[in-house]
Image (cartoon, rainbow, N blue to C red; front, side):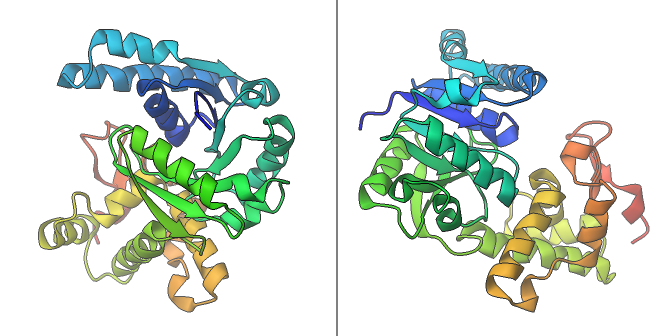
Length: 299
């Protein structure tokens, strides 16, 4: 199947990044969200990110305008996916929400369409089971920020066909990404390895071994990580980190995946990182001016 029309469900950080990337590489994109204001904000974000690419010289102003012209927004799920060759779900990391979306996608999308989820941890097999097209359901786990990061983790569910997998590997490569095929187990590869590291960094802070900045500095300078684990957790979203750890803990039944109580408390308090303005760092003055949150200054 030659893919031309792409539908993205969810216009948040990941959804607008995925829409930006597909449109930049010539695909017609329907960006879908039930919230009209969110769609408006998503287009503004895409435009701003394209401006950065223009400033860096990686694209021209004409490229920017052409990319934006390929993105169409709608709050109507049925209309948005009806002609799509590929639908990529990029909604909140919530199992019931995703299952409900895929039930609808199975009804509204054309029979030959591939249904993909950008989930970072939820079982593709479980998602596929609520549809009548299990062979055509797959995971496309993009990394944030999507236009910049090269990796696409391509997750095969239990029923995902070779044909579907090869098509998604090929379309990912056309986006100038590096697709890596993995099997469907909790956390896949990226988050099965990353989240326990982030959790251990939070435990290290919780136990008073070192402060926020000190922990991040050790990992940046000692392990050559571009960003410390606590700052990275803020960028991912502490609520997302917690949700993934809970999936790992439930899926494997092992205590080593149990989320740190500090992480649980921060999420309950609404301190979820960059998107809330505060996590381990305070972003009230902007991301570039971030400083250690006052809660952790004396630790």
